[in-house]
Length: 204
Image (cartoon, rainbow, N blue to C red):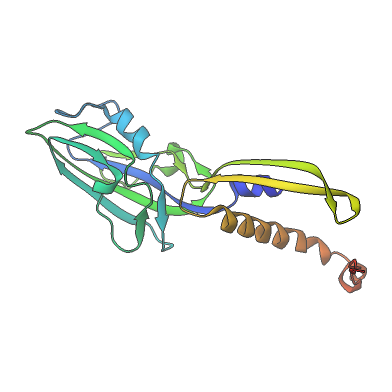
C-alpha cells in the first residue's frame, strides 16, 4: 500500500499544454529546428517542474539560433522551479527563432493529453500527457535482522527514486501520512475501535 501511494498519490507539477508560434498541430515541423513537434513534446514531458502555487502558471521560451535549447532557457518566475535545467529540448539552427508558451498545473497521478484539452484554448494549443507524481521508482527488500542478542526481527530497506522535485525522505513521510489519513477512516466505524487503547511493547 505504501509503495502504491508513493507511485500514484503524491502531488506534483507538470506541463499540461504547449503553444509554439506558427505550429498548428503535433505533426508539424519547424523550420531550422532539428526535432519535429512530436519529439519536442516528448522532451517537454521530461521537465521536472516544482510549483509553489496551486493555480495554473504560464512559462515562456524564446530562443534564437544557433542554440542547443535546454530547460534552463525557459523563463519562469518565483512560483515555478525547473530542477533539471540541463534537460535537452531541441536544437535550432542559425538564422531561426522559436517562441513558445507552456501551461503548468499542480495535481496528482497521471492525466493523458486528451484529459488536458480545453474547448476554449487558443488555436494551436497542444495538450500534453502530464505525469504529476514526483516518484519514478520504488523498490523494497526485507531481510532477517538481529537486535542485540535477539533475532527473529526483520529489516526493511526502501529504495526511492524521484525526479528531483522532492527528496526521498519527504516522499516517504508524505506517503505515510496519506496512508494513515485513509486508514483512520476505519477507526471510527465502531465505538470499540475508537475507545480501545492499542498496546505498545515496552523496552526491558
